Length: 187
Image 1 (tube, rainbow, N blue to C red):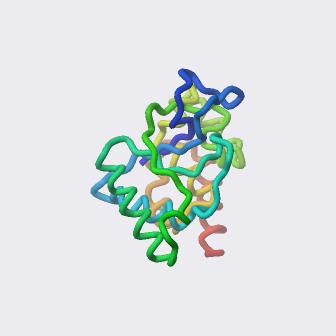
Image 2 (image 1 turned 60 degrees about the horizontal axis):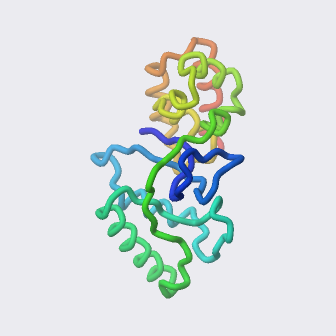
């Protein structure tokens, strides 16, 4: 439903990109468990993740950050299943399973980065959601950012169907519909 980028896993009170301390750059995901489970999200994570090396910098540490014991247990199980599927021992999976501690939003210019490639759309969304936090928390901005970015298994028909409800000006909606047509034809 929503994603935002930020910093977590450390002890610094107010981490920033220039002064991160012992925090790690991370993505926070709000999801509807009736649509996708936490275990499903973990399965996607392992598919798109380099788990076999350690990054010495905590800024780019490889980790699943858990909000509670239930998530931690599910993450441990998914790491074990992934190691078995890959034919690796658990000690070859270098990804940590760590507590979030506290999530701090990254600066506004880091939020919804793929929207930067559609600058007119981003400017419009920034006028509707005038703070970095508001833009980061926007479901519309999250969805458009996902489609403009790499994304996994994009459902172009769903975007086409839902686009009218996003409240975009007609000319922006038309541009995005043209983008949908060109991108969906390549897949």
